[in-house]
Image 1: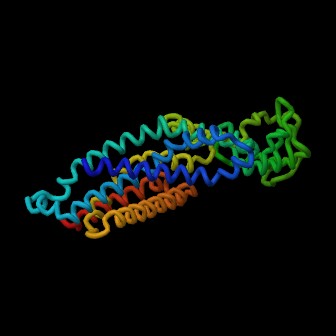
Image 2: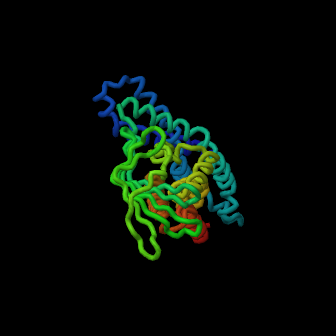
Image 3: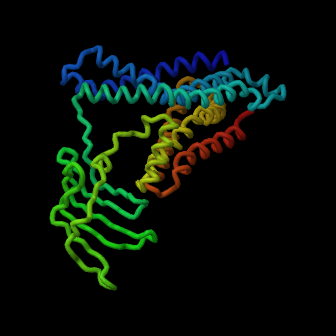
Length: 347
């Protein structure tokens, strides 16, 4: 632990600095074009540091443990431990305990510190860069009346409070089609939607016929229903995120992407434990250039892990795999890989 802890904080500082500079220089020319003050730019960087810590913590832990154990291997200091009958697992108990502690702490750190500061950072960046968030939305599908009424909208214009390319489907309790209403455009008049030249299709016996929309039919869904959601699941604490997903499910709206992001937050908290298993086995492969090889192996392992997580998350959001699998599959795969690598590591 005396070797791992200093290395961990040094690596954490290095990677946090690197991530902060990447984000800064990616947007620096935009800030300068709007003559943003140095103090405002510094505040953006400061608010982004907690997120950088969240990103850098696993790879810093991976590097520090891989280097520490690699250094002990290269100096043959672990030979005495192994020849005394103490396996690698027992020798690594302190860092395994550290991994469990960091996994628990990282979740609460993400939930209580990273999310508020990241939200504030995004809001301040939008203000400094004069970016206005639009509430207009496209390809809107909304269910109401327990799924009996379905709105399909090509484009909702929030400035005009209008629905363009509107299709309304009415179904009975069994889900059977009762009528279909189409309108090129609908405008909100303050209390209901006024449909332009609507055309209604309904069953007349066994024939689906077209007719004029009856005057007694009114559509009173609020414009807020069709707006682009200003909520970002990545900016909500876990408790609020669960309620938001429940609201999406009750409204009949797609919630797989939001549920995947929530599961991913829990899975990401286990990453310190995953990287410890990888680093314990990687440390035994290097006898020379331990510092360089530990750094390279840490970066390569982190890239492979994050790419696997990105692919699994994308598949889950596109509903090819369940959200739980998309968030947790990379974790279990790399946990298994770490256990297998330790099994065959020099001990």
